[in-house]
Amino acid sequence: MNPDEERRLTEFRATVRRWVAENRVEGLPKDGDVWTREVGPEMAEWLERLRRRGWLCLHWPVEYGGAGMGPLELAVLDEEFAVAGVPRPMLGFGEALVGPAIIAHGTEEQRRRLLPRIVSREDVYCQGFSEPDAGSDLAGVRTRGVVDGDTLTITGQKTWTSEAHGADMCFVLCRTDPDAPKHKGLSFVLVPMTGNGVEVRPIRQMDGRRDYSEVYFDGSRAQVADVIGGLGNGWKVTMTTLGAERSMGYAFRHFEFLSEFREVLEVVRKDGRDGDPLVRQGMAEAYTLLEAVRFLGRSELDRLTASEPEGPEMIMYKLLWSEAHRRMGEIYMDVVGPRAALRPPGEDYTVDTWHDVLFKGQAETIYAGTSEIQRNIIAERLLGLPRR
Image 1: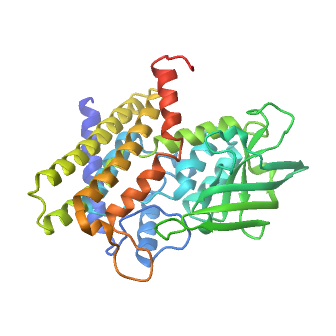
Image 2: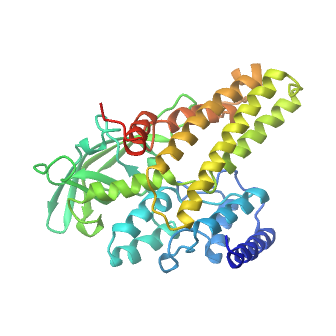
Image 3: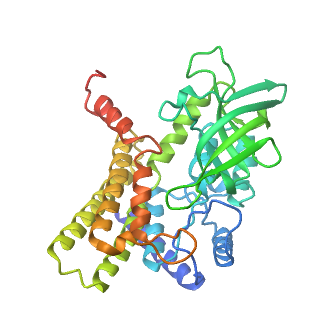
């Protein structure tokens, strides 16, 4: 980093630190991800202060409601928010997945019409990709989109749809040309969820939560003007979306993991088990994994800062952080000891941090591309190994 760039980032860090100190809201949740329009009063106030400051959708261009931050600025802001103990909100799939797809493949009219609605939380999105027989083989989706003039009629089923119960829009990969080759007849379309022939059936998880759903489209209507990338070009748009899903978190994911690590470490200390050699070995392994995620994430940030295109290396990052987090969940259950077999008292299925990491870690090796698929891509694209 040249001296001018280093000085600029130092000044930016001081600006962020000062602004957070003057504007922080007490009582905020630890998780800053916003999946529904309904949030608590503290979070609503925090979002409004950030919106007025222009610090939502940080990596989007300013002209579409974002902050126009580069990867290093984003890393600095995430670090300062983490140190201050306040969440840096991510506006769900709208910010993380739909926005990058619209910015990359949408028309200028679509960008100016659709992106500000995500920043203002007028539109809250869920992801309509996976189907019962089309998960890792996403190009095999069967949901149909029949074009009739300026509208599409969507019919089909999606499953494992995250946070569908709180969304009012869904970005749907559907087949609009059944006669085209498998990857060619697909379209990426934005479909309203409310009063539009859409049925959401939540899936109850083992921890009692209902974060995922089956979603049924029965003659649901969408506008051709809301097809991103044009009819038949959905696979290209989907690849951009999946790339954003795999790579999001270079700057901040290790902060989330570090927060969990500290919570478990505090429990171990309170229980007087921090002197146990096996416990110390487990926590050392967890911290080593955390640091590996941090270093590879920073390496990818450096690539982006140097304007190098994202390559297959981002697959390595997704594989590393998901497998590392899965292993951390197992370690935490072991080091917490007998308490790990219990959950907090109450009628609901509230879980503690170590339970949550264990459950999430299993899912994270599946969504955004299974670990098996990631290993195949690494073998073929990075190592040059034959497909068979």
